[in-house]
Amino acid sequence: MLSQEKIISHRLLGLQHGIHQLVLRGAIAATAQPGQFVHLKVGATTEPLLRRPISIARIDRARGEITLFYRVAGRGTALLAGAKEGETLSVLGPVGKGFALPGEGELLLVAGGIGIFPLFSLLEAVDRSRVKVKVLWGAESREFFEGAGLAVLRELDVAYEVATLDGSLGQKGLVTDLLASNLRREGGGQGMLPSVMPGFGRGDSVLRVAACGPRGMLKAVTELCLRQAVPVEVCLEERMACGVGACLGCVCTVTTAAGPARRRVCTDGPVFDGREVVWDEG
Ligand SMILES: Cc1cc2nc3c(=O)[nH]c(=O)nc-3n(C[C@H](O)[C@H](O)[C@H](O)COP(=O)(O)OP(=O)(O)OC[C@H]3O[C@@H](n4cnc5c(N)ncnc54)[C@H](O)[C@@H]3O)c2cc1C
Ligand code: FES
Image (cartoon, rainbow, N blue to C red; front, top):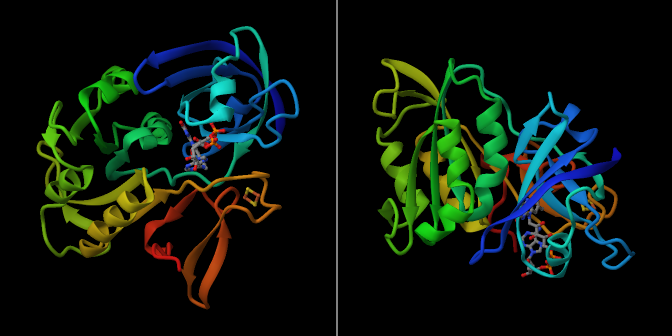
């Protein structure tokens, strides 16, 4: 669906990492689901021609608003950063297949860097009176977290652990170190594990993992989950052109019963079952 969305608010969150928060009001919020994204026209002219994909980070159906967080990475996002409150943007969306929404059990959200953004919408959508949720988030430094929405986690009052490469906040190391220590019981099966989170109820509980971040991190997360038979969904990022499944510019390989198959990240994903993704494509 193509929609004209009004910019309600647009601000720079952290100078060093160029992360912006963009709130749009329009038709997209009515049907958006966690893990889906929008394909944005970033300039007023045909340059650049291609839209840019940005995850839907927060969904406020009552207000008809979605919130996006994006980092200025190149020409397209730099142009987007110049868009002013009150202007409208041409937005294609919501696009793609998002995360499954668990109705019970425990959910670990595992994010690397700006991979936290699509997980915000999942966090908000889950019924936390029935599902125990914890966020594991890794990035380079304290400064990154403070500019990238740590305030959102605090506002949502969710349990979280962070890891930084320089040790300036949380545990020094990688988010996969946090995941390994949270998945502390060996064995298991079909995601049935004793509660892995301190204070998270008693007895057996279905644990699931949802992850977003760099491909190498997602591969490592999937391997850790596979060892414990914990179901894992991963949100993949590929460079995109059309965003509607027509150009095949964003394909990845998955394993199916009939053998390897190509899937479009834009419309078959971006969320996939981590166990199906072929991580080492030739
Ligand atoms: C489904 C999806 C959801 C995304 N959600 C977000 C989000 O919520 N917030 C956010 O900041 N970014 C997100 N991205 C990445 C974002 O789309 C790119 O950073 C953006 O398109 C770059 O455009 P540009 O013109 O500024 O940079 P370009 O000049 O096109 O590229 C600048 C640099 O970014 C790299 N790059 C460009 N596109 C991608 C991509 N799709 N994946 C990985 N690297 C890329 C390029 O290789 C290059 O090194 C998402 C990407 C996808 C596919
Ligand atoms: S971007 Fe064209 S098929 Fe996915």
